[in-house]
Length: 311
Image (tube, rainbow, N blue to C red; front, side):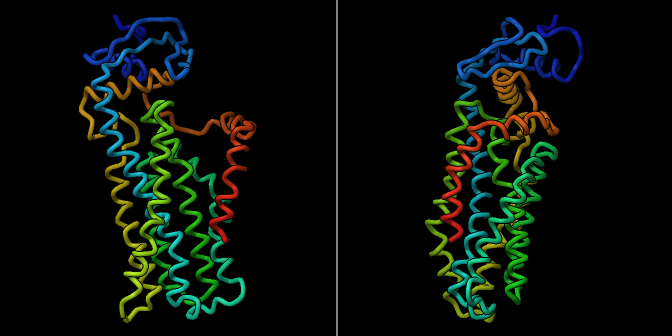
């Protein structure tokens, strides 16, 4: 007799599969449980206190760390290169070729963040589409627009491309913590999100040197155009990495064996009462977020960082 009842629902099937794993033990408890993260399960059905073999759990974490935040950080690094290389292009001849007099260059910097701000709602697509597809679409989008900057013939054309670049990148970065929450528990997320965002200073450490190498040659193509081509093309290729190698949730992680997948699902059950990814948009969640003072405090703290990058 199943611990969670006899109804053959997907949720019950997930829990039954978890119970069969030798590295996962369950014990029937009250309708709501809490673990050391103070993550409370949903009270829709009798829940369980789930005990997981720590050796297997550490192995699962190592595999997740090598694949999920690492791949996402690499994609984010490519996006940072594509958004910031305009400064190196400016001093490599773009200023003269596009006649960037007055405050035209400043507008090329500003228009990116205007689009980035206006289109951050696209991060909701992480809940609607499978994450590997949305990540691939986003990366392919900014790769196309970043590369097309090499063909810009006027300030107006470059403005349009910078706007589209900001729109594409807004669809990726803000949704990454949400994706990582499928794989990690609350006390584990901080480190992984920090490692993801560490791609920003990492990109800055070699962006200038890379741009110098690209623009110091004697190509028939203008050096600044070559810079956009060389640094934009990797994003086009990386989109295929996201499509084929980024898992949507632990159950779809091909690098985990069956036992490890069951442990990963059990971690999800112990955290939130749901072993699989929940799709769709809950407008009540959006409303609660907009009314949460912590979200606004975070936004105010981050605003100076964005302003510093714009000027």
